[in-house]
Image (cartoon, rainbow, N blue to C red; front, side, top):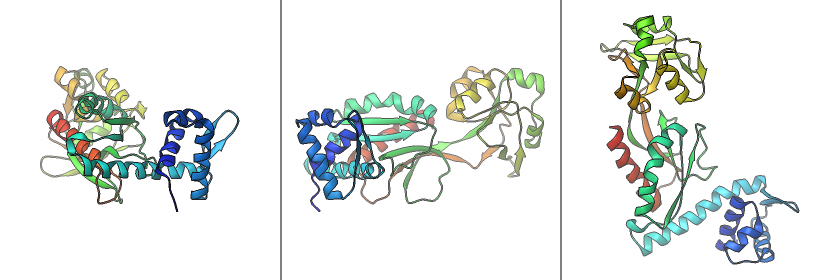
Length: 297
């Protein structure tokens, strides 16, 4: 198989722009030459990569599968060149990162500018979403994930602990009382995130409790839970990082502060399987780890 690297790069650009002619111009190819390169790539692979009409170009099923591999091919070669020709202070190429929406907006995006100033030949594509992506299938280099990780072939590195706590507004507790034990949560209005209806806690003596909770507000968006709690709607289970400002301002106070929410969560840097870590992934992971440990520890 004779796989032409320029054609692979062109295919990646076509996938991003949705147009062969526009992608070709970025490489100095005429529309005809660009189309011929894509056709030659399809012949080498024995697969149709693009669905073409007179007006649009879209990825075929095989094209979607190949895209993640194509990005990895290009990234691996760029990393090899970087490792051979330079050092870790001069990384280059695109880094594709995904993180949850609220956390990424608050704790990843603010540091992107500093990282890119330090590494002007690098670029970052940051996908912020509360959905959990298959990072291999979607071509991500790195995912920052919160919680406990299920067994997988992915490589994970713990960045920092992510303690969760119960919180409510002072007004809510003045009106409805302060729970003195985990079991009393069942008598309170609890603000529910997603499908979770059982909260697991451990008291100072090590006694574990599984409490079935209920409430009149359910949402799939974590920040909506925070707003409802601040406005006195009920008791919320939140990551401490997510309500640091509200705790500092007194808008929320901790409920059952001598209890630990289980399972205990962490923030993880997760990358695709493989022993070789690209220079830009390694450098960015170390950079963001240092930043997050400083602001979250």
